[in-house]
Image 1 (cartoon, helix red, strand yellow):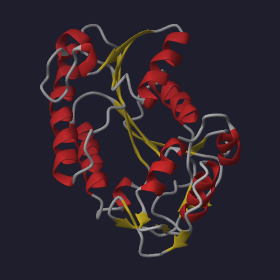
Image 2 (image 1 turned 180 degrees about the horizontal axis):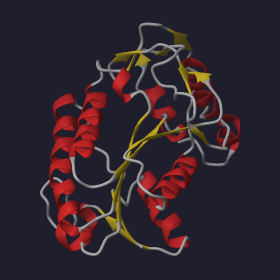
Image 3 (image 1 turned 120 degrees about the vertical axis):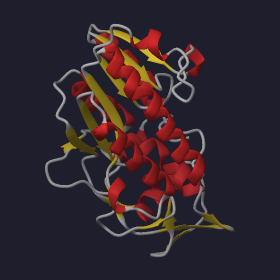
Length: 251
C-alpha cells in the first residue's frame, strides 16, 4: 500500500515511517520540510495521489489556545477534502485519551474539533486515542515548576512509550477502518506526581515535587478518570520503570 504520514518527521511520525517501510509498504513522510503543508494545502494533491491510507500524527507548534485550534481546524479542512478527492480509503488520526473529558484545556478542545472534522468527513477513519507519552513526562514536570518546587496533581495516568504508540498506530493503519475510536495506553496506572518525582530523579533534578490537587494539566484540573482509558483499551508492553532505565530514555 501507499501510506502518507502527515507529520512524518516528528517523534511518532519518524518511527512510524520506518516501521511501515519495514513491513513492506510504500511510505511517504509528509511535512513542511518535504514540501507538504496542511496549513496552506501546498503539496497535498501530489502527496496524496495514489495513496491508500493517510496517517495524521502532526502536532501544533504552539499550544496557545487560539493557535492550536487554528492549527487543527485549518489542517483538517485542507487535508480531509484532499484525501476524498484522491480516493484515500482510510484516514488514521492520533488523538488523546480523555480528550472529551477535559474541556478547560484549549489543546484538548482543539483535538475535539479535529475529531469532529474527521467524523463529519467522507473518508473512512480510525481515531487512535493515546495516553500521555512517557517521552513527554519530563517536559510536563519541568513546566509545572513553581519557584524551586514542582507542583503536580496525584491524578492517575497510564503513560505509554512512543515505541508502543508506533506499533499500535501501524497496526491500525494496516487494518480496516473502524469509523470510531481505538484507545491505547501503557500497561500500568501511576499518579502524575509519582511519575514526576521519578523522571526528575532520573535526570538528577532534586527539586521537591509537591502534591497539589489544584495543579493544572494543560489548563485542566484532573481526577482519576481524566486521563485513563476505558475498559478494552489496547495496552502497550513497555513498563515505565523499564523505559526509565534505558540509556537516554529521559531528556
